[in-house]
Length: 69
Length: 477
Image 1 (tube, chains in turn purple, yellow):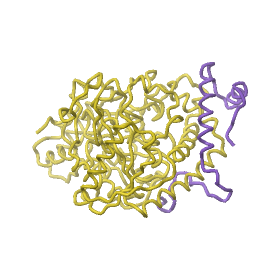
Image 2: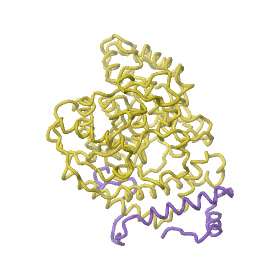
Image 3: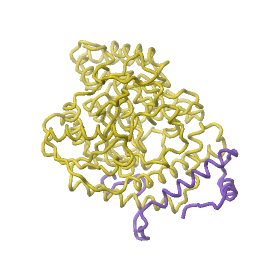
Image 4: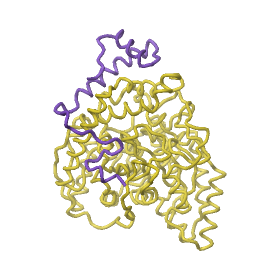
């Protein structure tokens, strides 16, 4: 599940825990940006199951042997 | 003969082989042109005049001795400044340097140097190939030679601007969500994103290691074929590199494309593209139909879903690269890079893996399309290059998808081809893609289209207009 803060305060608490240093202006901008990112994440296919295999890092092709030496 | 610096790479190479021009003359022509254009275009971050002339002298000496010289021998090129050139700093257009000077050439640069290429210098980029166009960085942003109050696109901004104004015979860029193809389209030149794994990424500063690509930006498709021949091939030093034979792409150009099945990805652009783009693509389809290609409509995964997949992966991998500096010295990044990269801190491991699972499925679905067709055709961009004041959006990728992103997600090779000018005199591009490792077919079809269209290559010449002036594009050259 994506991180979905209920308000700006909870967002800031999480941002600090992640080690980010944000100015007052940037807090709000990033908070709004996160909303857009979460909408993107929500738009990923929703029928993916635990048996679906992720693309191997560095090898996005369907047949990984295409790129392995 | 046109001015030396305005020749295509192919023509310049042929002239050097005939002995009618020398590498020194050609290199000097580019250096003179760079000096004239740099105040207006900011395309270069580093110019290596002295070493370039020395390399050109060495190239000429080798040719005079009668030693074998390939098509890239003595050809002056420049590289996006995220690509290492031994002895030069790789600035990534940032206050935060990667190193003082690179110890060695990136693998792609080393291959070109071996082929006799003359290195003119390093080219402007969006900060770390991600955060531009920005005015709060150590170097000014590159400008579009067709209208200097417009961006040249990004992130390979200098690579495309330099090609449009012919400040090098060819350049290299990198592409993680469209950063070769978008600026190529915005600047009226050719941009090729090869198959993932086709060109080594050793010595290229990463943005998103599982989606990064290196490729050429050139005046013509034929030039792109020659550069790809020079940089493609297996590199045991890069675990992403593919051990596949490299065809002689330039030898496969020419000939009919009759019967080639071209799938039109209309859904990807009809919602977003401005009318001039839609018209340009319709005209391009007519050209291809006249060449004997069979055009068919195909259905694909939604553009938005492919973009969501790629963006989640890019933001997460990008933060993994820059997280330490973003936490410890955020003020040293430009605002765009800092804000965009920090978004990646909020992507959870579950989100990232979900995107990678989706990626495998989407790649399989896109690959299956090539059972129906040989080439996919869609928009390269939804409109002409934006003005600088229009390009100040903090998170543009959250509001609309990039038509280039899908092929970074799936790894298929994709080619950006200039296809029209707007009424305001700004170039527009279209995009072709094909099966993994079939760049030869992509270049073959692209070359046939370019030849039949007859509108490009074109050179953006000084004085570079500050604002686009409506005019007949035929009058530009």
